[in-house]
Length: 341
Image 1 (cartoon, one colour):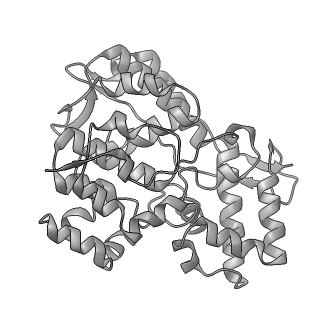
Image 2 (tube, rainbow, N blue to C red; image 1 turned 180 degrees about the vertical axis):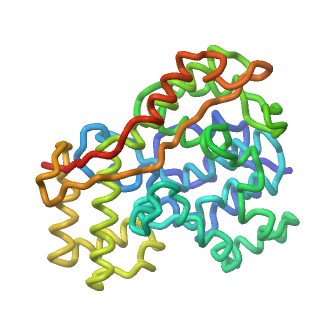
């Protein structure tokens, strides 16, 4: 199969992670990535609107889009499987993501599983003439690529390590400046595909110390995903968008254009412009139930307990990490928080 250089992919970020994941980008990834349905994802961020706020923990983040993430997932799957169907499923797994991504799960009340945004995946693939053209070209069917949960290397159950979980963890480790791209490469190069305790193929580490290092970094990311600032930002933005839909300022279908068109519409209305600017000004979290904007907010606790080839899960091999992970999972979210300027 003919290979193409990285410069053919449209990337608007300075993060250089794709070259870590694979030495090449195959034609089918290049071609499908250039379809309009995929390119739309370049205007949808991985940080679910949090990057628009003024909370210090989100200051200075690189642009990290669902587009960049999706290509990364495809490259990881390709690196470990060299299977077109599995890699294509990885590439297309976020194609139905709306503006602000999992914020819309909060809007739909799906804040604990955060899977409602996947509902339109098959329909979008089926209705994209360009994607259908390339699926036919490479001998694949919609049913074989519309559900990446079919492929354990692309996706599997928490706390296992999959291409999806691996890519956004590496991406955020680098973007949050928890580790350098060089460290990310060092950890990535230690990974293989092996058989886990359930007899399933899984991406796993060969070196126990590197596995522990990755696990600790991933837990730092997990804490950010459910930090008060993150949960409050997602809930408040969900409420703003829902109210704007009720008022007719935006339509829910607008969310499937991208973040820029939605923000432009919000800024063109007096009510929503004020709400959007207030959202953008949040910089501090206060623990109080006395403010009308206070909320008790629950969110999905993403976490990874990687497998070490021949040894088992990091949390079993290193009991201290296992206890730390249990403590994190047991931490309460049952308290009121409020964002302030």
